[in-house]
Length: 193
View (tube, one colour):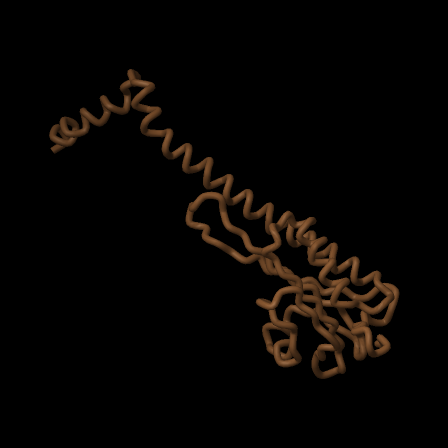
């Protein structure tokens, strides 16, 4: 039995010890795998770079809003959308939603909300009351207000490697720095907190 196993393994052993080869054949075998790895790593790196850039831009918008002492206007938020597009290197296919929230001891309440695109509705009290939403907002003192900045950025990979079109959603909560809240100035009513 040993003799039979030894005879059947001999061609494989010879093949493993063979050192002669053809560079052309090896290149034909390995080049497609190498190219697929290179393209895949480019797409994944680009995707994570875009996601990281959009998150940093969202934090920047939140920081700008947290330093504002005057009331926010629709024009001001629309201009922040343009700034976001510049910071995140988007082609205008992104959306920005800014919401001012307060905590009354039992639930969050929307003071105002503004979205720059009609595809993203303004935030509502019903949406804020949902369980999934509450777990994303940090603990707040009674009467405290926060600014919620949400961005939605389209990402289309340059090559199809199994990672299809995505929308990067960012959710950043910031406390106002120099005022008790960020008020809404609609041009009619006096902004107040």
